[in-house]
Image (cartoon, rainbow, N blue to C red; front, top):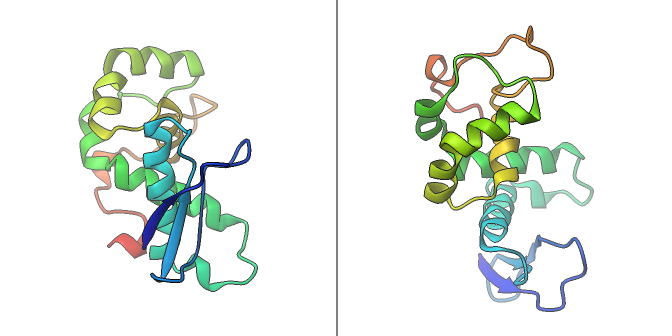
Length: 151
């Protein structure tokens, strides 16, 4: 896998993986994105390679969701987040923002990711729900990874 920069990246482009000429895959990244976005993009594209998503001519829609989840787990592993887990799931964006202000800065600096990547992962882990009554499983009670490709 070789990482390449796409200096003339179109608006909204973060990255893509394609078969390479000198390597199995070339990962193209937008050099104008902030560093945390580039890190997530690289992890996301690496997840596509690990999961053999690129073997399909027309990949299913959920490959993007799976690649995001794997990338978030690679950069923000559950065992590092578990120490910061709140007693109850967040039920509003304001609650997440308050928590991020108190603890998220530490996590963001350690992982080198954006706050949106952290928020995505919190939702994926069940820490952020839209209703207070939605049941969630605490990470500390379920330590195994949920992605077979990473086990």
